[in-house]
Length: 411
Image 1 (cartoon, rainbow, N blue to C red):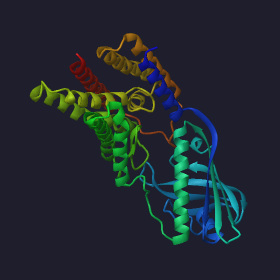
Image 2 (cartoon, rainbow, N blue to C red):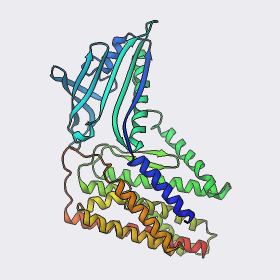
Image 3 (cartoon, one colour):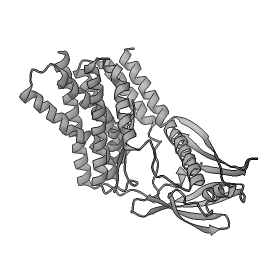
Image 4 (cartoon, rainbow, N blue to C red):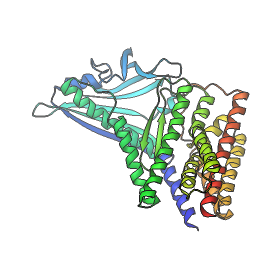
């Protein structure tokens, strides 16, 4: 089996582990020790405590039964109103412990919370400090959300300790700070440098790929703002790329498809402009510009793969709601990408194998999505036609740019 096939299979297995592997029921824990009375931590963690809104995540809590209530969060839903969640409390010993379960959510389907529970216990140490134990248990598919929960709970614990001891709460975090994200971008470029060669040109190409990632995520962010999100942000993940986050849940199928396509769609303009500049002004360049074009086009073409969690898979699932339409379009997209690989010199056998692996990855990740509480607004026929035409155009631009650039470099 060719080395490229091993690389692709390994990458797909890693993506499956991150996105869809049946991890099962897991618990993340955090222990907080603070120089305060135990009652201060209890009031901050207990839903009916005086300080439950200490971090601004919840604006109001009202009782709906002897051991049940409804909390109003600070997160906005699809309709622009705050998301509300009903909850129940079991196994409670006042001032010492309780277990919280969510029974209804105005934004997410209840299936999201079916296996979730949070246990909290508060005690004191012999030297008078307060100790809080927080355990969050859920059933996971893929390790990505489990890792997110671990770091989210860690952050909550650190902020709670600071608030309990000083009375000060600092929103946000060091990871999202612009300086940190710039540092993450630099780290990403340095991590990819060896793959391009440890010399000046190699570092330039690694920095180019980092810039391409940033432009791609900027396209997603622009789409969020165009779709009515009041805020959008980007998070760099060294070696893994980046993530663009909107300010609220999706409301329409067109919104999902348009936002997913705009990553590669936004980048298609600079790719086409670089090709035009190359042809018109520097037809006899030394090859560096060719490599920049190939890097930009190949990265965006890869994101258009018709795999469920990739941008291309998201677009296909919104345009076609039925399995037959999704399958036909996915195979068309895979055919375009396989033809691109053959055109740049890979054997047909290798590309068929790659296509089969990607098709399998798409199938095993289709059940890992989060369902909304109510159905999204359907896509109209003009929207579907426009998005479909845009998908083919953007795919063609990047595929042709890859073929053109690779042929200039190697032939």
